[in-house]
Image (cartoon, rainbow, N blue to C red):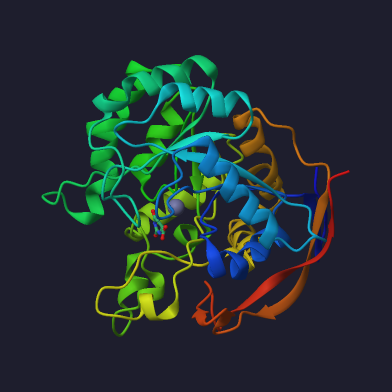
Length: 354
Ligand code: DOR
Ligand code: ZN
C-alpha cells in the first residue's frame, strides 16, 4: 500500500508497458528520461527496418543499454514486430530465451513505420496459435486502416472487425489492447476475460480532440490513435483510476524532432517520457484516486505479463515543476508533453530494485 501523507506519495517503482525509444542519436537523447522514471519498459519495435528477429532485438537491446546512464537501473523488454510472414519458430525461440517479451501487431499502414505490418490476421494464424500455446502476450495497435472509415471511428470499428474474432478464435491468447482511446474499448476490455487488458497513455487521459484545434492546428497534440471526444476521455479516466487490474500504464511516448511535427504533414506522436508519472499523478489526484496509482503504474502490468513486481520505490512530492518548452535532442529539439505547464507533483526519490 502506498504511504499517502498529504504531500508525499511513495509507491512501488513503476514500469512503462509501451514506449518508443527510437534509435541512434534520438535513442541517446530519450532513453534516460524513461529510465529515470521506470524500472522496465516494453520497447516498441517500429524501427526502420522493424525488429522482426531475435538477432535484431538483441542488437537493439545492446544499443539501448549502451545509451543508458549506468547509474540508472533499467531493463528494456523487447518486442517482435509482426509481419505477414512472421516466423512462429523464431518467435517461440525468442520468447523461450527471454529475448522477446511480447509481439506487436500493427495493422499495415496504421501508424509510424507500420508499412511492414500485418495486412490480414489470416496471415498470422499459426503465429497467434503458437503465442497462445506458450503464453506470449500480443500487443495490439487497435485501428482499422480502411480509408472509408472515419479516423475517429477506427478503434471502435477495429473491435468489431478484428479484435472480437481474434479473441474468440484464440481465447487463451493474452492480448493487450494498446493505448485505448474510446469508451467502446473500455467496455470491450471490461467485458473480456482475464487474458484481455489495456494500456492507457497520460495524454489520452489528459485532453480530448478539441486540444488539437485550439486557435489553430496544434501538432504536439496529434498522435495515433487520435484523441477522441470528451465522453471517451472521461471513460478512460474512470477505467484507469478504477483499480481494475485490466488497465495499466503505457505511455506511448513517441518522440519526433520538432521539425517533423511542425510541418505540412506532421508525424503522430507525443513525447511524454520526461514527466509521465507526474502527469498520471495529476489525473489520479483529480479523480480522487491517488491510492489507485500504484496498482495502475506498478502492479497490474507485471501481474498481467506474469513478471515479478519491482521491489524499489519512488516518492512523489507535492512541489510544483514547470515543464520546459523544449528539450535538446542531439542536433534536434523535442517538445515535451505539458510544455510550459506547471505540474504539482515531482519525483523526489527513487530506490532501485535490490
Ligand atoms: O502517435 C503515435 N506515434 N502512435 C503510434 O502508434 C506510433 C507512434 C510513433 O512511433 O511515432
Ligand atoms: Zn506506440
